[in-house]
Amino acid sequence: MAAALPAAITRLAVAAALAHGAAATAAARGPPTPGPGLGPWASEPPGPHGLSASNLALAAHRLATATPVRDCFVVVRDGVVVHESYRSGRDNTSLVLIDSIGKTMTALIVGHAVSLGLLDIDKPLQSYGVQPAEIDGPAGAKWKTWWPNVTTRHLLSQTSGQGQYPPGTAFTYDSDEYIGHLSPLLRKVSGVTPREFAVRFASQLGLEHLYRYEGAPPDGLADDEFEIGGGQPMTCPDIARIGQLLLNKGRWRSAEPNGAPVQLVTEEWAEAMSTPSMPAVSSSYGFLTYNNLPPPSFPNCCSPRWSEPPWTGCPGYAFGHNRNMKKGPYLGDDLVTSPADGDDAGALVPFAPPDIIISCVRSTLPF
Image 1 (cartoon, rainbow, N blue to C red):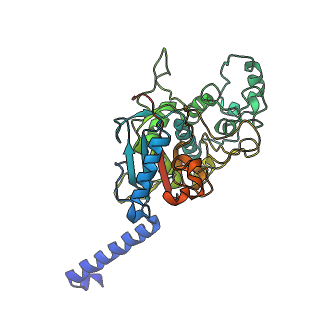
Image 2: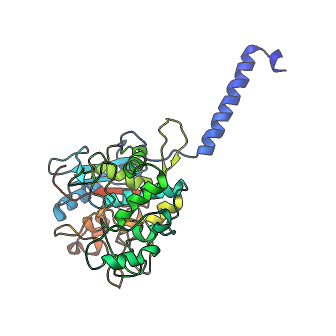
Image 3: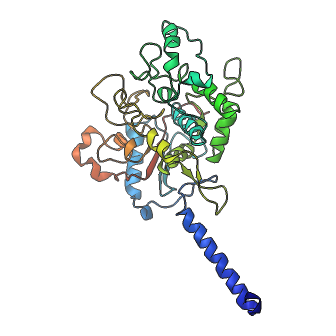
């Protein structure tokens, strides 16, 4: 029957079928995944995104006044940058050492291994053939005693015990010797070097440069490792990519203009990273990520306060309600208010919706 139709009608029928197929594919994909994909961030005025330009400027001013150790302030909503301001000669290309924000990236890399079916975080590391490192100090012997019980979850939640407590019973924060065991674990389960696995993941976020500056022997890491505990150089907009991935529940825009989004980590993993992973032990820590929730009534857990006074302010980066200490929550946590402002301070600054990202890092020497 189709052959008997005039050619023009046949072309229309084919075009209609293709359009229907494209529409069905688009419907299956759902709405576009917010964020920059592999390209640069788009910038738009804050008004159309429900935020006040004057209030954001006020927040930036208060940040610069109250916490001069913070040199950048970037706000993202709906996947676009709606405000950015910089100090001390920096701009959106300036690299700074991100300290333990890099741990959150490590947790995402481990989560990617989980999403690929390579890793069960509740199996002992010993079952993957990972041997305990030689650790100096009085806890060394006990660390080996506890080793058969240490899991990836313990390392991600900073509850390894460090040889002083049974794994999972105490918050024992560490940036090197203990969580460093995640590196040989990634080597075992992925079949490639830890750095190659990390670079592959980071490249999908548009952060292919992230592990370019890892130290080399004799003073640094082997050339196929990456620093599990963080400290890599990033720009403020780079850091916002991490927050966007978490807000996206692990989804990221495809490298193809009309491609389906990529699920880099599972939704469950993204949620777990911003949820207390061992609530009975550390009520404000997820997977290698401080949630900046109100500190608990018991010791050994709270929000980090490592910079020199004043300590108030943006904790590196924030995403949604889980990363805001105030119940409001106010944009930028407590950096935009102070006790002198009283209860009316919230009227001067925008409230932080659950889909907002704040990137603001403390000043360090330029990389």
